Length: 82
Image 1: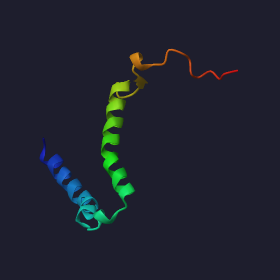
Image 2 (image 1 turned 135 degrees about the horizontal axis):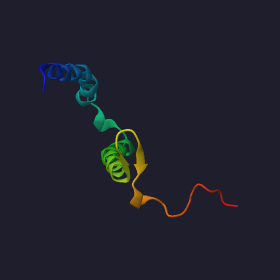
Image 3 (image 1 turned 60 degrees about the horizontal axis):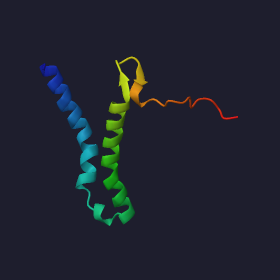
Image 4 (image 1 turned 45 degrees about the vertical axis):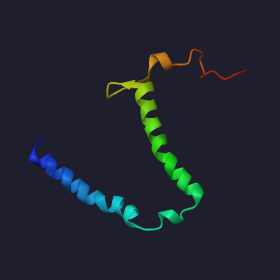
């Protein structure tokens, strides 16, 4: 790894740190409504599940992406019912 990339990573961290640190340093997360806290607890697992699903169901070589063959629907869902 070159020194330029290390410096770029440090610069990017310094630029994005304040926006990530402010919510952690601000008191008052305990005062959020219970419904909001429940929602925030579910965000992490939902994001991880969407990443896992996209990695499992979508295959690609960088230029073209297709749904994995084994997960395709057997019937044509694009036709409109009469």
